[in-house]
Image (tube, rainbow, N blue to C red; front, side, top):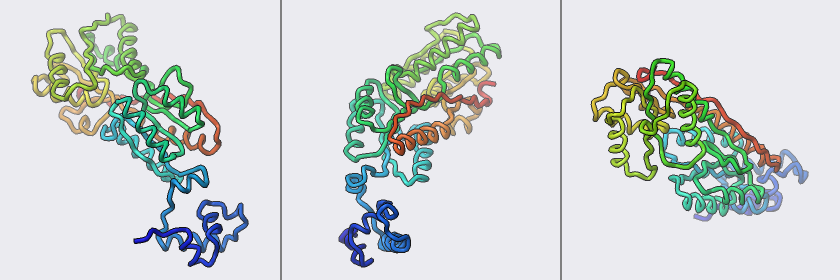
Length: 337
């Protein structure tokens, strides 16, 4: 079946293709096309099911009304929810969102940025991987609107929106100490990303403020690329070690989920034998018995603010350089009061 074109609409409306193009590109008033005729063309295009070629339209107008969203893993609970918020916000302003996952692979992230450039997206929301500074600098130098979420590069002048990782973890560990916990273990990943560094530093600084010695034996670092079974074995070994632990804080929710499986395997009772907290909330934590205390990120606020900053840049053509750290929320449940 032949795809409907602007020429087809023009023939049915009895006007020139230029007139149809001006109307469909929002330039009716600018080109002094009557409101009555503009409505007629718009209605006809809708009735006929006309779908504009966004790339061709972008060449004419400089805008494709598409946005690129690059996250770590779209199947992750946090990033999936974030994508939904961004998509909903984009829809309000007639934008479409192209989703991509990097799996924290820098080469893949670079390829995805190139793919989105080829699709001529109007702006980018990116959860960057290690070593992606150069690609983001190129986007900024090319005057492409960019907002980083979840993490950022301290030496790169760009927009970013994320939870205040340091304060969120610091306050949570301080709360554990206030409730009598002195041997607080932490499980994290080996990614050299600022958000993970801030979380671990929040843990260390809270212990220091409470005058509790930092012990590297209470910190377990798991390789991000480790196969699931390997990661589970490492977490189980850590939880079952002789090093005393009266609480364990998992600094990502996927590690927290692994931790729950390990606790069941080891038959450790929560919270009687060990208190349990995870960074990032998850439906599993709410439904688990006992229910799991979690440090929730303000995912809706992050998504909406990122979109607001991005759309302002697209509209104004001016770089914002907006930096936002949002507060986390400790959702207290049965595993750690």
